[in-house]
Length: 336
Image 1 (tube, rainbow, N blue to C red):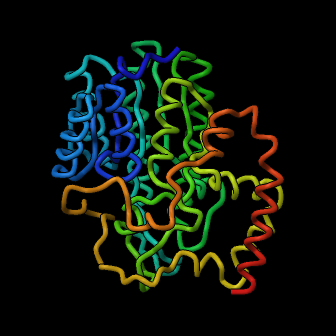
Image 2: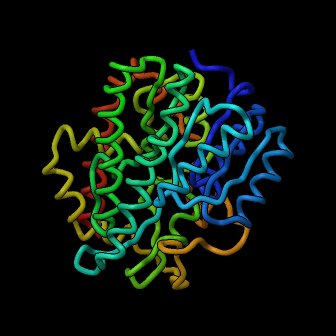
């Protein structure tokens, strides 16, 4: 049985921005002790101040998750400061919006190193301490595109697929050897975070999330719930279940939907100019933010997440509606 959040020590990678940052703030209100990891020291310090203002305790540790010695040191500093690790959330990620033909080998390698190896390294760094205690939790953040890839995000989709496969295998290994350690996979829908302004874009414009869009608090609340009520998979944002359900029922249909009128190509291109800056190889400047620039089009809550995805026994009624929604999307796209 997991400890109450007020008694947990939680490591969060990708804590300076987006989902990681919002999760830190949610946990702060529950008085958890947090170890905050990211590359941006200024942003981490800002998150530390926010966490402590909300009643939590935080240790910021500048970390590039693609570098094993840094991740190993992150775990070491967590234990040195708080004496243990109860939960470890792997959330750091970088992205590029481009076709495969436009992507360079260096860009592809960087996404794999941060997104996939970063989560593998995080899990490997946490496991010795969790094993010593005989209990604890790993939370790996994948994506709806970790079940069904989308065009213009092929390499990113591949890394998120890799996280899903890694998590599935790790879960079984631990169930066999260390049943006190649980593993949760989080699959967010499109979330209004700085991800889209931080991503490298070769679209000729600022990338935008595929609607519907949810606020990062939807994911943070789902993660926080799972830390006390372990779940195998958590879909954060009702639409996050849409593509996976349809992919399981009719994979060829998804191809046609994405191609209808160039739908999934158009949906990811905004009419806003790209500023030419990204965080692929270096952290962004400034104090960071949990939210992005798409708030006027986003949902602040997700009834499906609260009512269905956190309660697996209620999922049966969702599949038919998901497929009908995709069919409607295809018809709409075909008119574009």
